[in-house]
Length: 518
Ligand code: FAD
Ligand code: DLZ
Ligand code: SF4
Image 1: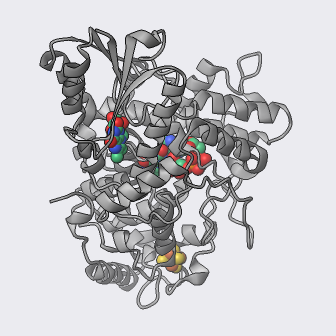
Image 2: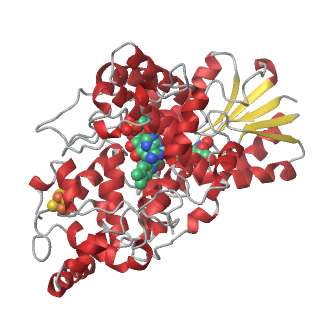
Image 3: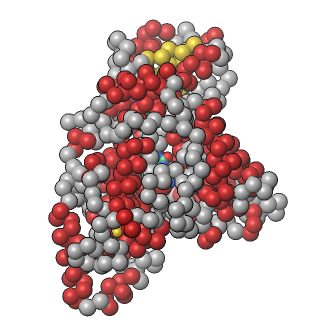
């Protein structure tokens, strides 16, 4: 029989390890839309459309290029509903001599894959996913003798390894590894970025939109404005526009937030990178070229490259290094249910309302919105990691557990106890006020500290610091804040704690049916 090559929904790369070196007349590619994957959490409708449409387009491309593809649609008769069930059917049908597959991005699926060799009477090879720069073994080597892991040091290794932005003598371009001091600018009044290309649904996408509207009607999210790139060509066009129009301001305004501005100067490329439509190294090389050609400043280009060969690789390495424990980590013992407004958007806190609106409309929010608004709130309010994890996995079109979980558990919730981040990213309303125009549109005031009309982030901040004093006081990076707390008079401190308690009492927990079927 032939070689059977299953390709998962986030493996849509033409140079995938399992396709490389194969001959077309001796290979059957298998792609499967399966109920299990679409519902292990109740993904945002746009996320399912994106993945199914991209899978169908990828199949069309492969077939055009002469490959044989066995494509199973969600509604096809006999669809077994799971990867393992569909693989069994395909093995029955094609009688392959070998199943060759690239390892799954998620623990859950990799566990299933590990059973395949025993389950099926045919040889199964599981290949490393070499679309990542840093292998699991390499990350482990780097991490194993360190108490705490810091992205910055990992990143420097990746710079040396790739040679990106390095000068001849092995020094970082411009003399510094990191130019964030030139970034982190608050938004300018009325700031608005050039509009990114929007891709209107073609026939394939329209058909999938109908399917999803029909079969996943009770999933979170709007389908009205589906504009994600679903092919490599579209993704390239999106990248072209970023390098032509937005990278220049990417660095300075990376942390800026403007009400109703859902793209700003961000690349908006994470969905395409994670699906495999764009190669992360190629993007970094293009970024470097735009600096070398004088089209973009070093602080923007270095920032972009750091997000990809630094953060993205580090997060993925960390995931495999800490799984499966990371899923259950809850160092701060946070137990509160996720507030219902994370799903409905109904809150009078203007910052949260805008971030949730963008999340619902676009299946996207900027990094800083995910971190310092949505994430910061969950941290301060003590929301249970499991519920926060599920929410992030559901709502973002770029969300797969390998990237979502470390960002949520370790980066925003400090649930790993500080292995990944050197301190909790806790902030009061002051930070959001500085970096956005949200507060001017809000029912609350960031300048009011306690009581009626005070920004809830203010008392929540002190409530958080107070309740975790034992753990945080000795932290070099935030321990000093307790001197401020101790200098306040008793009444003031009590006001903070009472205001926070009163606010927390108003939170209505969400129904679990939003995240998963009962
Ligand atoms: P840009 O701002 O243009 O950044 C460029 C690229 O850098 C991104 O496309 C992405 O590939 C990479 N990148 C930047 N930051 C990170 C990071 N922290 N981790 C991994 N890659 C990064 N990103 C996901 O792809 N999937 C997720 O499920 C996801 N969940 C997140 C959850 C939380 C709580 C936080 C704080 C961040 C999360 N991120 C996630 C990272 C980041 O928010 C998104 O990658 C980014 O917003 C995507 O938009 P963009 O392509 O315009 O990014
Ligand atoms: C996220 C997702 C969804 C919603 N549906 C499918 C699907 O039907 N078929 C498929 O191959 N992949 C899907 N995916 C992406 C997978 O969940 C992803 O490839 C694995 O989780 C990675 O381990
Ligand atoms: Fe958000 Fe507070 Fe500003 Fe309102 S006042 S937008 S709740 S930070």
